[in-house]
Length: 320
Ligand code: BTN
Image 1 (cartoon, rainbow, N blue to C red):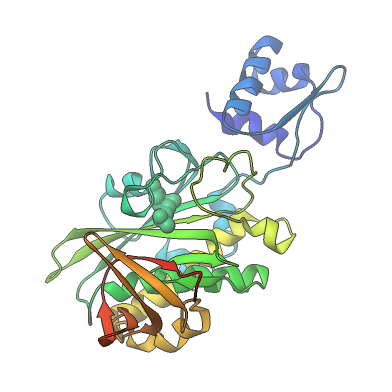
Image 2 (cartoon, helix red, strand yellow):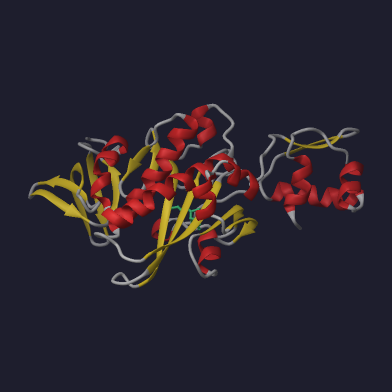
């Protein structure tokens, strides 16, 4: 079933009778009922009232290429002219990988096998969040790739600040958090040689309007943008804002590396001077986070002085 056809009718949040929906879609009333049940299986809450018909408990704005384009300037429209919005996919990162060329952008309403970092699942219910992947090619990189994932985090944090006026925090390397709860995440995948031209797949997930029920299986504390801003956030506008920030940041990173962004990082860094554990495959480092290096590595003050780390999972120590 193409969920978007019936959702285009229900998106306004008003009641629509089974008969009128059936007429528009050219299907019987019982087929309409079946499609409504499918929407419920996708995690959408539908009110069904005898004599009035069906409506979405919360109106939604479906993603649409034209709506995203409308919020980009001419240069950005030209840069991101190859953009697709899909209904349900496995993972938008895989959609992008399967297509040659760059820049290429793919967004989806839902992911059936969304991936997070470190092999985790990324819960991706229908029509409520951003699942966005961008293929970007680098001819030559000035400096290390480590800083790239931090730059993408900065782009998303800036987009959120521009659109909603809220300052999310960045937790090294690229988790976006609000009051220590996860708001968005970034998954980078590389194709090609570090020494030559390469294509990077930048996957971004933002919790926009996820209901508590849909996010019940997430194994960490999380928040969504609409919850913290108390506003309805347009996903099309947010997607455009993220693309627009990437259009500025990625070329600058390619030319100059991460060192230009260390100041911006500090604006968003939630770990600076905080007691942390850094967990690596076979050791756990205890120390105090001291910001990041010119290459985007994590600096940690330990018993051995300030040490530099390229990888690991950070958790905040409750004892400070
Ligand atoms: C994290 O663990 O913090 C990274 C989450 C990345 C999720 C996004 S959603 C779009 C893209 N497709 C995926 O399967 N994952 C990324």
